[in-house]
Amino acid sequence: EVALEDFDWLEGESAVSSFTAENNSVRQFCSQCGSSISFTASHAKGKTIEIALALFDTPPDAEPDAHIFTDSQVPWININDGLPRYKRNREGS
Image (cartoon, rainbow, N blue to C red; front, side, top):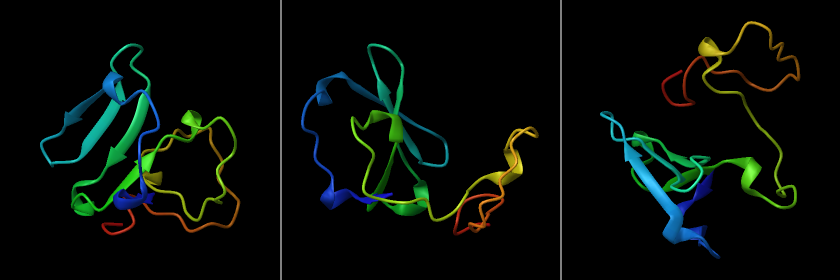
């Protein structure tokens, strides 16, 4: 999650499309290939953006700090890294 004020597109912004869900969360995706780009939760009120890690050419300088939406995880994943787990999002756990 990144503060929106700290996020800038370097290139490719013209290929980005958005979908706004009924709860006002916004998903951005590539209009050419459909790949997920970002997610802005409705409770973030336009202040933060979550960026798909697969977009980075090099590993980001950050470490995971939690697992979210674990109530809908696939049953064959075993999360045992000791990080906090939230059934839904961090605020509405």
